[in-house]
Image (tube, rainbow, N blue to C red; front, side, top):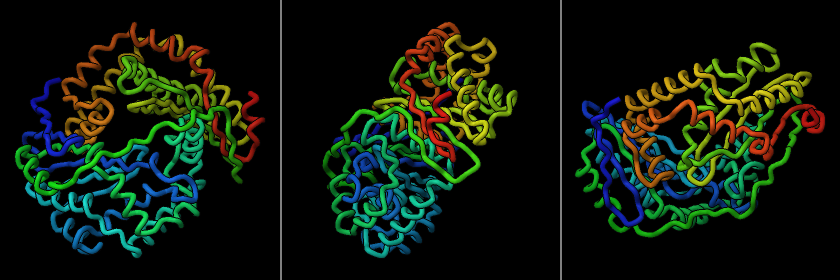
Length: 422
C-alpha cells in the first residue's frame, strides 16, 4: 500500500496541535477540532452535571456578532456540513466544506470557539435536547446497559456518560456556561486536523489572524476514584434482557494494541463471521443480537461484549458468551488471522479514500500518540503482525486470571442474582 499524501504540522499557538494532510485531486476539506472541555471535567451532580453536553450544542447557536440564525445561515451559504459531540476529554467540532470555502469556514468556526453567544433562549433549546436524551436513555436498552457497564468498569470521572441529571441541567445558566467555556476551552490541549483540499500556508495564516489573542492551558481531568467493577442490574419492564461484559484492554500506545484488536475482531466483530455470532446466535439461537467492541484510549482501553436475549434464555446466553471468551486463550485459527488482516487493510483503504476518515484518524493520533501517522505507517503496522505473536497475546489477554476483573451489567425483568449465578 502506497500513499503520496504527507502530513504537515503547523505551529500556531503554544499548546495547540494542528496538522493538515493535503490530498491530491480532493475538492472537499474535512476538519476535526477537539476542544478540551469534555464530560469528565463537568461539575458533579446538582452543581451542573451535563455541562459539556449542553455546551457542545449551545456553541453552535450564534457567535460574536452573529445571532443563531445568522451564524447558521453564514455556514449554510458556504455549504458547510457540521456537527458537534462531547466525549470524556473533548468537545469535538466536525465540519466539511468545499476546499475553496475552507478559509472562511475556519474564520467562522474560530469565532464560535472564541466567542460563542450563549444566551438564555439558546440555552433553553440546548437544555431541552439534553433533557430529552436523558429521559429516553432506557428506550434503547442495549446502549443503556453498555453505559451502565462503563460506569462501573472505568475510573471516575471517565465513567460519566455526560447525560447529567435533571437537577444538574436545570442548574446551568448562560453566565455559568460562559464562565465554563472561558475556563475550559483553551488552546493548550486543543487539536485541529484537516484533510483534503487544503493549503497549509493559507491555513496557518487564517488561524494566526483568527486566534491571535487566544492563550491558556486547560486543566485536564484526572482519576478521582478507581473503578467500581462487579455487577449491576437495572430492572426494565421488558420481555428482553440485555447484558454487557466489560474488561480492561490495551491502551493505544501498548505494543499489544493491534494484536488485541485482531483477536476481538475474530471473537465478536467483523460482521457475521465472528465466533460469538456463530456460536451464540446462529448455532444455539440464544439471542437476537450479540457483538463486541474494543476502544483503545490514550490512558486506558476497554473491551465490551454485549448481547440481547429473552428473559428465559438470558442466563444460558451469558454462560455461552463466557465460554467462548475463555476459549479465545487458545488463539485464532489461521483462517481467522488471514480474514482479520484483510479486514484491517480494507478499513485502511476505505479511510484513505475519505477526507472525513483521514481528518478523524489524524486528530485521534494527535491526542492518543502526540503525532499523526500516514496511511503507509498504519498499513506497515498491520503487515508486521504475525500469527504466532497474536496468539501469544491471546493466551495472555484471555487467560482466566486476565478475565477475572470483568464488569457485568444487566438490564431486564429478572434480578441480577438469577443471571449472575450461572
